[in-house]
Structures are given as C-alpha cells and as structure tokens.
Image (cartoon, rainbow, N blue to C red; front, side, top):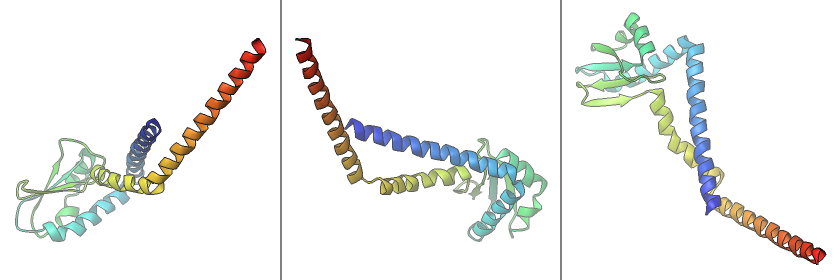
Length: 167
C-alpha cells in the first residue's frame, strides 16, 4: 500500500511539475513573441465570433497586458464583429487568452490559457495512467516486495553467521 501511495504521490507531483513547466513555457513564449500571440488570440476570437456575434451585449475580458494592447488597438477586434464589443480588464490576472461574457454575464466562455491547461490536466492524468497502468503498479509492488524479502533474509542469514562467529 505504501508503494502504491508513493507512486500516486509521484504521479501527482509529475503532473503538477508538468503544469508549472507548461505555464512557464507559455509565459516565456508569449513574452518572446507577443505579435504571434496577438495573431493567435485574434484567430480564436474569429473562430468563436460565429457563436457570439448576436445583438446582445458582448464583453471580451483580457488580462492587464492584453487589455492595454487591445484598448489601444480596439479596431482589430471591433472590425471582426457586426455588433459592438466592450473590452475590459479582468480583476484577476491570468497568463493569456480571454473570457467572453454575453447578456451582461448570463452566458460566459473562458478561453484563458490557464483554463485550457487546467482542462487538459484530466487528459494528462489519463495518459499517464495509460503509460503506467494498474497491472504494472502491482508488478512493481510484487518486485519490490520480493526485493525487500530477499534482502531481509540475507540480513537474517548474515546476523546468524555473525552470531556464530562471536560464540
């Protein structure tokens, strides 16, 4: 049981480290090539506009850096839509991406990078489980148990030999 618990802790730590590394890599990529990131955002907005471009209040919410950029370049978003768009800054900062609020918040979509990565966490867990399935864990536990028992018997034998020498 201890071995299985340690394995699960290791798996969870690996997933956490993978997410942290992914967050850091995304931040670095955005920072190093902000213009490509803006193109990426505009492509996603173009893709979702078919669903949201209705005669109702549409609010697109960005992190502080993207908000500043799109406030200064609002035509890049406004030109994509038939209906007026309100651009706002989220009170909580996130790596990148955006949120959309329709009908004064009655319907909302979260296209933030943070959310996209967190959604994929369950996929990552499934993939790790596929790589190391339960039968492999049991095989590792069996090998580990055999290893421990083998070493215990060697130690006991060594102690018996030591006791015989001392007599």
